[in-house]
Amino acid sequence: MGTQHKSLNGQDQRKSGTKRSVMLFIVLLGVVSLFADMTHEGARSIYGPFLALLGASATIVGIVAGLGELVGYALRIVSGYITDKTGKYWTITIIGYVINMLAVPLLALAGRWEVAAFLIIAERMGKAIRNPVRDAMLGPLIVAAVLYFKGTYQTGFAFLLIPALLTIGVLLFSRFLYPHPRDLEATTPELETKGLTRVYWIYLAAMALIAAGYADFPIIAYHFQKTSVVPGNWVPIFYSVAMGSAAIAALIFGRLFDRKGIPVVIIAVLLSSVFAPLVFLGGFYLSLAGMALWGVGMGAHESVMRAAVAGMAPRDRRASAYGIFNTGYGVFWFLGSALIGVLYDFSIPFLIIFSMAAQLASVPLLLMVKRSPIQ
Image 1: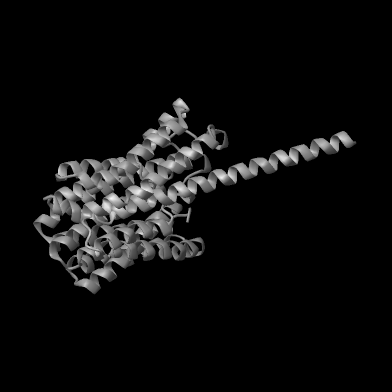
Image 2: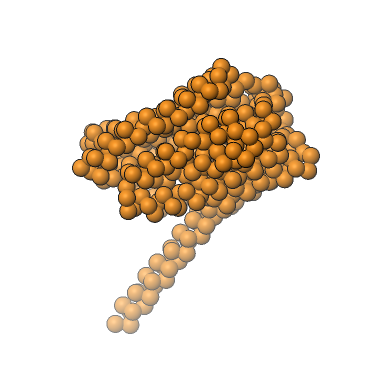
């Protein structure tokens, strides 16, 4: 009896130790994410103006921004596959973070837009989609402070070397503490299209239209720089406001989506579609309002628009459903960003018409999804 009691105590202690290890691992990765997001979100807030300063056109800015996002989405699928096949979890993770983090401060040395474009796309390769709010806002504010004290864009990128190195340092520390984190992972089914419902494909088409019509922030910041509607040191602050708006919107829409479903996505589309005329035609304050609405849309993109996929695919096809969703979303985001860049050089009114029309064209499809028996 005493032996059995000791055995049970030993098992409890091992379970307790395992729980503490898992929690510490999660906290460390959270710290990595915090510093990483400070770095790349701070940089993203001035990509557009910096490319403009180096002589890039709006078309180039749109293509670079869209291609960066597409590469980011595609790399997630490829790196995940390679990791599963090789088991080199930490090697691939560290390589990705080093490229992602060091590309940002290297922008301080870029003297041509071609070099800057290459580094921006390299940074996007390791970008994490799920951004904690505090660091997504803090990075742009750091850059805004540098610009306020008469610093240059290059100085802003150089300052971001601090959180970049902190990211890599904490990541390496985590690697030595937990050399085999794959032991904590669940198995993932292979990507398959069989079993995906008709309503899923309709919803994917709706999201593709929304992605195509959504202007990436670098092209918006490029516009602010070119027209001087927003002073240069205020551009990162505008981005920070958008990130704050995105965080609040994600919380509100998340709560409402649990109760109301797809109509909440429709409301988000209707609200965010108005950002284009405000941002591209408005003055300082209307542009600020437009950025808040742009943030509302981004909050919906990263929360309820993705969450809705889970209810449209069988449990054993959800990994495939999300993989296809992310791929399609990334492709159409790239195509839309490239076209928006071309339209900016050609006609801003046409840009606004395209942006609003593409987003609003998703509403009839979303209504079809709403009427589906699955909803």
